[in-house]
Structures are given as C-alpha cells and as structure tokens.
Length: 522
Image 1 (tube, one colour):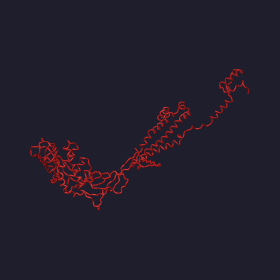
Image 2 (spheres, helix red, strand yellow; image 1 turned 60 degrees about the vertical axis):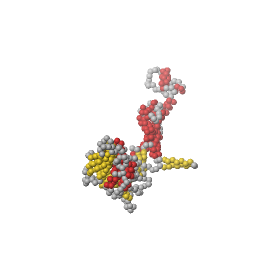
Image 3 (cartoon, helix red, strand yellow; image 1 turned 180 degrees about the vertical axis):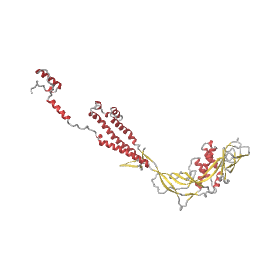
Image 4 (cartoon, one colour; image 1 turned 90 degrees about the vertical axis):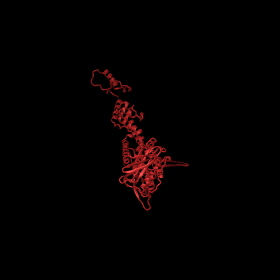
C-alpha cells in the first residue's frame, strides 16, 4: 500500500489521535479534492495497537479477591462469637447455681507460697480472692484484645474497600482511622457513614474501660447459714422442791442490779427472764465446722406479775403533824386485801415500800404483792406527793421454747413459744415474804425506808429518766420485769439439780453454721 505522505518521526508516533487525524487530512488535501468520500478513520501506530491489545488481555484476566487481615477471616470471627456465647452461658449457669445453692463453690483456706534462695526466705500468703478478682479481669482483657483486633483490622481495610467500590478520595486514600485514638474513633466513623465500624469501635471502647474493671466485681464471697438437726445432751433438771426455806436474797438482787443497772452479764443458762436446764454441744461435730448458733428446744421457767394501779385506797397518817410520820395503807384488789405500814421522813427523797399477802381468798388469786411509792414533801398532808398504789398478782410458769445461743451457750436467750402449765415452787410463799422484807437499806435516820427490792425497782426505773422514776406507767412496766429477773436468777442458781451419770436425756435442736462460698453478683 502506497503511503500518503512522508513517514513521521518516532516522536510523532506518540501523538494523540487528534494530531494524527490532522496530519492525515493535510496529506489528503495536497493530492485529492476536498470532497468527503466517507467517515474519517484515524490511523494508529503499531506501538499503540500493541498497547491496546495488552490492555484487552489484562482486562480479560480475573482479578484476585481483596486481601483481608487474619482477624477478619471467618474463623477468627466465629471464634470470638463462640467465646462470647460461652462467657454468657457460663455466667448464667453460675448465677443460677449461686441462687440455688447459696454460691456455686466453697472457698477453702488461704494458701502459702514460699521461696528460698540461699539464706533469703520469702513467704507470701495468697487468698483465693486473688483468683476470683484477677482471673475474670484477665479473661475479659483477652476478649477485649480480640475484639479490638477485629475493629482495628476492619478500620484499616475500609479505605481499600471503598477504593474498590470507586469511593471518593476522602473515603479512600485520604481516610486513615489509625490516627484517631480508641477513645473516640467511633465518632469519625459515624460521621463518615461507616456505622458498622462506629458501632464496633464504640463496643471496643466500652469493653476496655467498663467491662474489664467491672469483671473484678463479678464474683464475691458470701457466708450463707446452713442448718443441721442435732440432739443436745441435758445435764441438769428443774426441781420445784429444791428451793430452800431460807435464802439470802442479797446476792440474787446484787446480780440483777449488776446486769440491769450497770450493764453486766447474766449467769449462764438464764437471760434474766427465763431459767433453762444446762446443755452441752452435740457430739460428732466436724472440727473445721464454722459454728455460728445453737438452737435447742427446751423448757423455760419464769415468774411474772400482773400489776394494776389502784385508785381506791385508804391512807392514814400518824401523827398528823411533824416531819416524820407512819403511813398505814389499806386497799382491796379484786377481793384480796393488802395492808402496808411504812414510815416516812426527811431522810429519803423517794420512798417505795412493798408488802405481800399470801392468803388471798379463793377466786381472787393466790397472793398479792403491793407497793406504795411517793416523793417526800413536808407540805403534803401525807408527807408524800405523786403517790402511787400498785397491786400485783404473781404467777409461776413452765414454758416451751428455743434456747438460742452462740456455740459456747454464753450468752443465751430463750424464745418462748407455748405456755405449758403453772410451775409454782414449793416455797413460793417464803420467796415472796422474804423478798419484800429483805434487810432494808437507806438513811438510818428514817423510821422506815425502801427495801433492797424496792431500791432495785427505783434504780431500774431511773434509767428511763430521774423524773420518770415515780411515773405510774414506768412503775407498771419496771416492777414485773425486775421480779422476773430476780426469780430467773434464783431458779438458775438454786432450783436446778445435776442429772445422775446413769441418767441421760437429750433435747432436740439444730446447729447453724456458715460456709465461705463464692457467688455471682446479681
């Protein structure tokens, strides 16, 4: 084929198609008329043809898939999902076991770790709390690292993925999430519309700053009580006939005063209200058992007073004038007469005289204990003001209930459940008479003064306030409780006898012990 013009130099072969088209038109214009004969076909060089063929070959080759980091492979993602499901299932299981069994595992004693190097000896005592506080944190940190690796790999891959999808330059080559700290990496991701990355970065942040520290408080030790039924051997028994005819009540009143007024401790086997038989701990208990409480079903013995304030009574003063006088009280309480004679004078400020009648008519109660109380006043017609006349009916009972005490039975308390029957001691009349007439104390210049029993009542009443010592309500509450304490102490120290060695008896009960257990915080 004959060329239409001189061959262009090599540099011209690299010109554009438009330049080649102009050269071709110029050559044609010099040889032929300018009348168009068909569409213009640009001429290309052999080098350009070779380049086009190469591009065609490349476009025909299947492009490889985009490279992905290991944390984004399905195996890694599935592993994280399995681990998270396993952690959730384990926590739910441990929570259910904790609620059902008062903790899911028992905690043993601490353990020692010793290290000796030549003459240097180191010993460290580790509590098992080291395990349940540090191990969950360590596991949660591993989980957070795995989750953070997935989020970090995805943030590095995202610009390239956007580039493959013909994204803008701001979302491809100019996008680098690594320059943002984990504290707020999720915010630029949300602004760029990468919701998946933003949500993942936010969860990674929470798992690092919240989940890890909270894992240290995931478990906690608890000390739940456990109950075990046992029989308690009985060492003594109540004997209503063992009270002597004459008893020195001064030590008994002194014990009650030491406890009720000065905060002392009751003798063993009484709580100041009931006296109970002596018991000993059950046999066969494990040495390492952490005992916290004993409860024994037993009988308690007590005395009580049913007191009333009398408004109708006859009080006579003799002589009618002077700073001292003898007062004669006569009153009738539900058919039982009470009579009391007591002297008053300026020697004492408060008076509380007592008397007993152990021969009340049938139908009016077996006996009465009556009290006359008042404050000395020289201007009063009876030399007493704030006068109170109180009559009380004593009763003695045997009550079933529970002895509740620590493992050593000291101190103990008796919780009554059912009143069984009256248990009046054989010498009850002597007890009441000797109690109210016990060697008087006070100012010897007074012709008659408050007994030890009355003084104890006043001392206990003053604990509620000196101005309330002669208040009717205070006396009605204090008098029965003081006599109850006196009788319980008397019965415990004088009216129980030891059982013979060949005679055995037991009372049913329970032991309560605690065990250190690990529980899931709910």
